[in-house]
Figure (tube, rainbow, N blue to C red):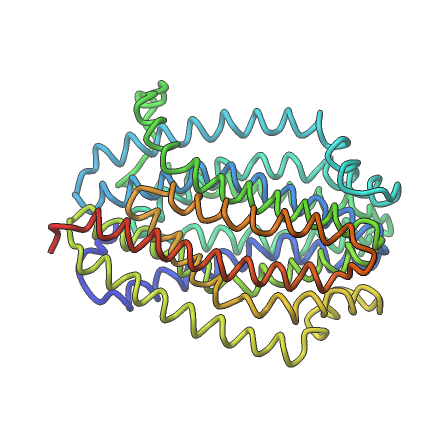
Length: 447
């Protein structure tokens, strides 16, 4: 365990965020590497894989339900120096993660075709998406065990092992992707199926490697078979924190699915452009997301130690760092958004659609960075319901006008992107007001 209740707040935040950012960067490369090679297969392949990317957001929501609660409770226990409580939380979280992962795997095989047919009218896009999801689905199921272990380590202030494992798995994926997708060295290209297989193999290796670390090297939280029996009181605590955080990702998935549904009449080129643009945006968000993930264990340990001053200092440092980062990438997307899309596609239609999306949506980057920092603080305090409430408000403010304007004959994609910017700003304002109230309530009486 790393004690985060002493020492420089900005230094702790930067150290944690740097390791988390590297880990998240390599995790994102899973999708970007696949997308790079899949882009050479045509618009239908890109659009099909992009639709599955939205499903990955939904799965991330479920992993968040377990991972956020695990990290928060273990961080608070670590701040109190209570190893017994941390140990129980980890083992219960792992068991629950495995059970949910198995359920997701079974549902994926049953529902993959109805999901794809609901989001696309193009038969080729549906066919390619189904082929990719056949193998990518099991990879998504493996994420549950991986996230459970990684979240437990993050709660103790240890993030380096997860980063190393992520690097190993992504390097493996980078090697396998051109071989399986494009047939490099074999002369037998597998297309989108190869992309899914490469990701699956890489994640199997990652889960095994992280399990070996826990068995041989981890001491603060370890596997204990005697604590595998379901403890509903611990599950309740995990889910009370995790369900709202997972709900936010569900809302994000609904948000993205709604956009795909609205723009489907614009064709595969528009969907592919949006898909690549949104993937690029996810990569751009990595640094500020890493900061928000670092906020949770840092502020969480200090909250557990009842140090209100250090909790507030954590938020101030996160907001400052995040704002500077997001303002910088906003400028980049105004200057040359097309260059970011060309990395993945040379199709003029895809480039135009993707660049237009990035240029406009970048106006919301600073507000999005603030929302991420606020979300991390809600997790640290152990109450993520206000964060969910702000996300619900954002979806409602976006969805109703979006559906209405999409029916008008003069509707263009830019109208949808500008609406996205406006509602994103409103989201940040609502989240700030709710967080200020929560901090005043929970930190009252602390030093």
